[in-house]
Image (cartoon, rainbow, N blue to C red; front, side):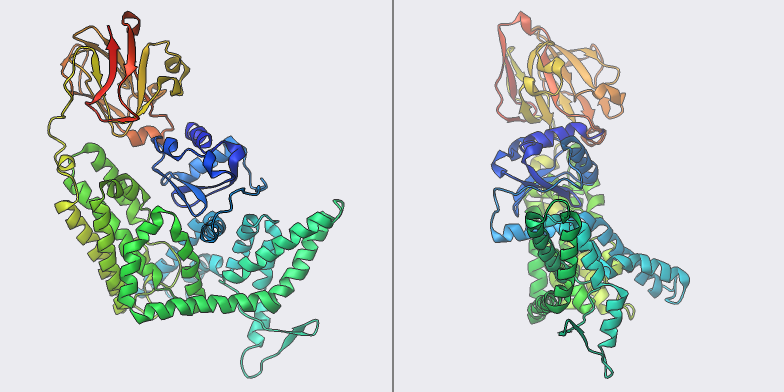
Length: 619
């Protein structure tokens, strides 16, 4: 229930639950596949303080939420009545081939991306434990943890069979069974028997079979799942309803499994090898150049959600070669943005920026850069550019060093453990660490020196406010202007408490909008009443139902009876804490005695800066 209000807001801006074709989430984003993209209101959703950014890319409507995306995803599903069994409708807008490919890849991998990364991290930590002598490969402790870390990769065709079956609109349990057949012990025994001088040949209905080891493979099961789902749909069209529930699955597994071993598997394996060797060829031509290009462009791909196109390639490299060079190159790109955020944290004197930078640094260290990029480095531009440039330099160093990882994951501090070679620490590991550290330090230094506008770096100076007369009221906070009737509280929206407007705040500060005095201050400090020298009574109510927070996120800088001048600081509040508690940040600004005047009009546009004109009162 904590995110119910946010879920309703998101649903209303994506065109309602009827417009949702599918919904998945990754580490920080809700990924909608909509029936009609034109029904979505991206700009309106960006104004919500619970949303970091909205991106339309790869045929998806992506809503960047942050680390608590799973909770918001569940709230949206509950509010829309979506379940795992909800059938996917046919989208009216198919989009281009590349966009559809990105949509397919993200739809297949996002449901289990968390455990995929966790398994890779555990593998890396076990490698670290072996190198440090904390464990031995013969110990029971190591074997149990190794089985836990390796299970997902060994049985990856089962997991991919399930998610691919759902993505392609078929019975996911049927396609999971097909994945199970690829990793069945009998098939692995047949593969082992087909190797060496005493190889034993097998056939299916007289057709020779080439057995391969499909454990950890990606492409074969995805293609097999697509074929199975196509067969299932054809069967459901022609079979009688009394028998199709078991005849259709029977036909799918009876046809697709041998077809996979005979044709799909060998062809897909060849394709996997060609992709892996193709990447390896490009990488070997100029490792430093490949590192520089990927290090510079990775975060740009993340912004548009296009990084999913590289995920199967990284997993495929590990399946074919047992190692991957792409992930280490991407780590400096991550730490480049972390370093830029550190530079902002050290340089800025803006309280909101410093608080956001602090939390973004922590998230970035563990591989989640969206809060830093969307909230700080990209809006400020120069820090983002410095982060990308530092990522390019660090990536060139990592590429030149020939650093590898030996298990899949996403770039974060644990990736260093995944770089440890099976034979022990060598120069490639130190090259990966050096490139990442240089990217972090360089972007931090550049941002600290030249990354922030002078106003942000010196925001402790007195706030500049617009000149005004007795009938003009200044904005008490910066943010998005919202009509009062759009406030999600009927008491305010109805105008019962007076005319006015609302602001969705961008920062946690409330300043005086005119010269006057503090008439009232709620004990919970979430609302304040002011009386201007000219007799205007104003109520500023920070958020909806925030009285329930008992004053914890609020700090008052004035008391009842204090005289104030335009721009004086009245209140401070923790935006993140209010959002995390599930409350709407829409802040009504009400003229309590509006009946005493000829009218109250809004003079600001869709957004306003604190200290600029907001309302005009007609005498």
